[in-house]
Image: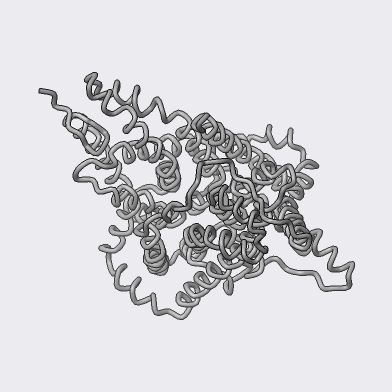
Length: 544
């Protein structure tokens, strides 16, 4: 009698279930220990807990928490306010080039936040093109620093994300619904009320929650554009408490507040069920809008697209314009730049490999008895609850008590970036891993495949493109990360983002702009490669 025992649709032998369960438990243990051990160590150390908890009532800390919530809420509302009309305009547009515009929406996500901040300062800063236009009109020069700069930067990075999510919701409306709207000659208002608004309601709550968390945990943008104590968020306050004031108790209090608040916002999104698929009748025909054209609406949509693309592309044009005059050859041959590049690549490759290994261990165990799916979804999401700057802060404080901070800094940076990659890679890998198990699980069990043979011929055979997609996103994310390295940076441990920040701080703007161009181009190529892989995979899975 075969020892193959169905586990969901996986059809794994008991031995194989044991191996996968063990790998998943080891991955879960590593994630939980790395993310929370330093805070537990500090909590039981001498008087840290009492001092930290009592400092939560400090007026400065309460002000930081209040500003963090306020800027995140306002940034989310502005991203929705500008992102939804952009998605509607793009969906209504019948002009060629929609695919190119959609790819352009990837650019802010591909750009390291520090490089994006430099581009925004070049355009919207006191010496930027917008300021020159204000002077020409007889108006005072605007300042990008403070709350204004934070909001502009958050909208720049998150508006395209909202637009892509909203466009996905609109494209889920059955083609037959649009054809019926055309046959009934529905007015633009009726089309919006009956078709567009329900599609947007299904996807915007999740997009809003994601944008809110990204803005709430923003570090680099606030560090560069905050402009002073009045515009400080929790993560920047943690960095300042350790890097400049060395106030561990205050840093621990802020860290506990951040973890608690982010958890309160994240848990409902994880527990909520995904929106149900549209129940409207559909034959699966390609989507095409048949609703009557409206000249005023077409003009408004063209204006929205023009303003949106100008806002998104101007910082990229500024980075290219200011970076090309730099002596790129000299920068590439600079020993400091070379060392920073090697360090960045080493951290990015190691973090991506570890993040993918942990992701595979988790997604391949989904559905096994003793490992609830909620746990498999919740633990990787802790990378959003405890972002890299907080992980670095915890280990920085802990290693000050127990070890050599400088010597262990690279390992902490690798692990912190792996945890940041985990939420995204598990989301990419999980659907395809489950589909592969459903397709080949029964056949593999009947053939007696187990261990490496089963993994190679069933799951990994279908995960080539999702793994490449995850690797591209992971490399770009780790290459542009500043948070995990910010607290540990020294003369012997410098990455490209920290070197860029140093050159900006020392007023070596030409070098900073050249490094920003090189780093931005590299991350952009990685993200575009990921997008092409994803699009190619969708075409291959599309029905004939």
